[in-house]
Image (spheres, rainbow, N blue to C red):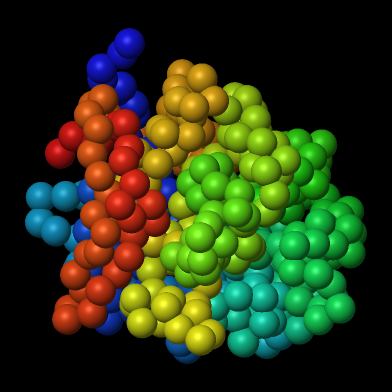
Length: 345
Ligand code: NCD
Ligand code: ZN
C-alpha cells in the first residue's frame, strides 16, 4: 500500500475566507493547502466592484503567513444593479476571474443577490463577450419548492435556459449536490463545469441527524441522499475535467452554528485535501485525485497548472474537535474523525 502520495499543488476553486479577525484566522489554513483560491464575494456589504475586490485581495494577502505563497483570485457579487462596465473593468485585471450569481435569499449573505435573472442579461452578455466566468449558486428560493429539490429545479427553470441563451458563456455550477447536477454538467458543452465539496463526497443527509441535530454538517446546498453522493463521487473520480475541487469552506463562529437559527456552512479548510483523499481512496480512485484537485480547475479558468508539489503521507490522525479564533471557537468539518492521510508541512 502506498505510504506517500505526491500531487501537483492543488487549487481551491470556491472558498469563503470572510473578513476582519476571522479572515486572519482562516486564510493560513487555505494558504497551507492551496496555491490559489477563488474567493467568494459574499461579505457584508458584498464585494460588487473591482475596487472592493482588489482591496479585499490585499487584506487576504496581508493574512498569508510569511514564507507561504498564496494567490487569491477574486469574484464580483452580482446584484440587480450590477453595471456591465464593472464587468468590463474586471476583465482587464488578471486577479479577477469571475462573477458570482446568488439568487436573493438562497444562502448566507445573499440578501443583496439577484431577484430576477432576466434583469441580468446585459451583464451576462458582457461576461460572455469578455470571457469571464459566471459562478452560480444553483438553487431556487421559492418557498413552495422543497429544500432538497432546489438544485434540480434551478437547473430546469434557470440554468438550462440561461446556457441556451448564452452559448459562449463559461459557467461553473458551484458545489453540486445532486445526480441531476452531475448529469446536466456532464451533458452540457465544454464551457460548463462544476465544483464539488468534500462534505458532499463524504456524507449524505443522515450526517445531519446522526443521534441528534448536527449543525456542523449543515451547509447549502444541503447534503442529499446517498444516491446523489454516489453520483458526485463517480463524477469526481471519473477523470472528466468538467468536475474539479472547490471546498466551499465557509467558517462561522461556533455560537453562530450552534444556535436556534444556525448558519449554513462547513469549515473544511484545515483538512481539505486530506478529506478529499479520504473520499477518493474509499472509491478506489486515488490516482484521479491529481486531475481533480490540481489540474482541471486551472485548465478551465485558462491558467497555468502549478509546478510545485505537495505530499500526503499515510498517517492516521484525528481532526481537532475545536480550533481557536480570537477568543471564539471554530469547529472544523469532520471534527474528531480519524483520517488516513496527512498533508506534510
Ligand atoms: C456559504 C457561506 O457561509 O458563506 N455557506 C454554505 O453553506 N455553503 C455560502 C454558500 O456558498 O452558499
Ligand atoms: Zn460557497
